[in-house]
Amino acid sequence: MSTRRLTDEPLRVLPELLGHELAGPWRRGIAFALDYALLLVPTLVLSLAVAACFLYLRDPGGYRALRTLLTEKTEGTPAQHEALRQLAPLLVHIDAPGLPREVQDAVEAGDLDRAATALEATDLVIAFALGQHEEKLAPNTVRIALERLIPKTLQGVCLFGLAALYFTLFHTGRRGATPGKRAMGIQVVRLDGHRLSVPESFERFVGYLHIPGSLGLSLLDFWRDPNRRLPHDRVVHTAVLRVRPPAPAPEPAAEAEPPIPPAAEPPQQA
Image (cartoon, rainbow, N blue to C red; front, side):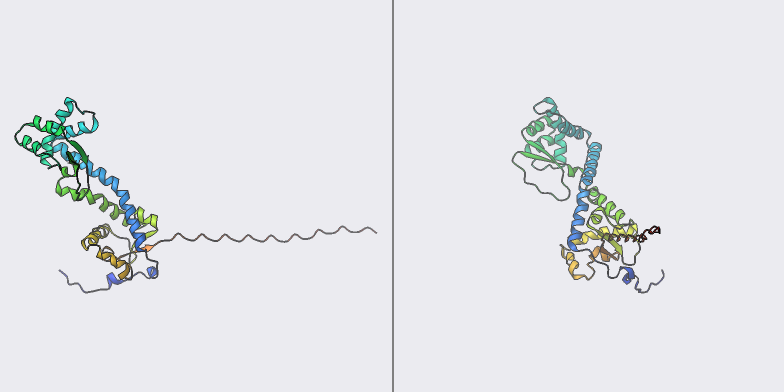
């Protein structure tokens, strides 16, 4: 392995960037909130699709029972009892919050009819939550936590996968900005003026984790760093600049029309 020497490579700044206006912390924060608002629905859809896929593969009976309860009006019918009968083992397996002890004992004893009868006296709440979630349930309520159907190894992918793809690809583009940043008039640039590569852009996204990892203390760099660079900026040598629309070009002055010469007087007759 060749020996490397210290260089000024990460410290050089393209002369054309010097003196450029930096993006303020509020503008950057609003842009980040806009981007995550755009990502919320696609992330939920992806997570629900993954949960449904794993439930179908692991417990087809539980999948059919849950689909029946969601799509059909079965309250007080034999179809509801049958669906709850198939659903009871799944609720025990995922340790559904609020599940009565009677249901667990009935499933362990193999008496699914007794488990279904106990579930009929409860209110089933089907919910999905991203990340850590604690909820106080009303009495006699069972929460079917769909996020528990996703293996732990894939929960992080469902939660951050689309966000990683979103920020990585948009920051490597020609504009160097996500839709949220474009709406707020800011842009991510490398200090040397080159476009971010895909690995660098992904590394910058991973650097976002430094903010919760430092309990938010790294946000003080907005005021402590002279170039308002946060840790994820410094790791790939970027800065976030304010981009203003170009001023409209002044309209060219209308050319003055040449004066009209006076008409020649007709010759007078003697």
